[in-house]
Image (cartoon, rainbow, N blue to C red):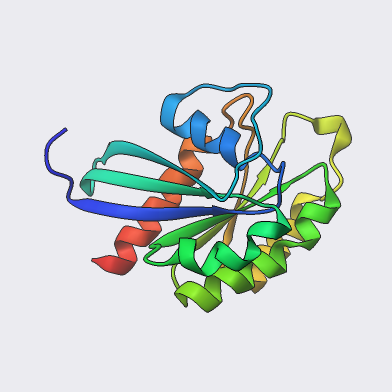
Length: 173
């Protein structure tokens, strides 16, 4: 790929086991594994892509560990982030209820950088505990669009990352 027009840092935020690592690997390598080891601290991945209207982009994706023990490191990991994706598991209400903490951490560290809300694990239709309307209203309250994804099937994963990238570029250009 030619020199990128934009180099962006994107952070994935959310509780442990919501599928952040699965989403990143689906986006970067278009692969899904049924099990991952818990992310300890942070996992860094990169994807180079071209968006018609913006040219070449290098997206550096920081997949933050969701365990409470890494909370003290969040501010450090968020340093320099151009945007973030807050992820919850649609089958686990607790992960949705914790989103306020994640949004607050991000806004304290990065101010008004673009954020996107992802409800992951949409493939588990018969286990859904958080209705889309409720998540939409949380997103509106926090100035975030909602995209429902499934890292397992690939549903909306690429679209979600590309939407955030477009929002970031709009803000920086």
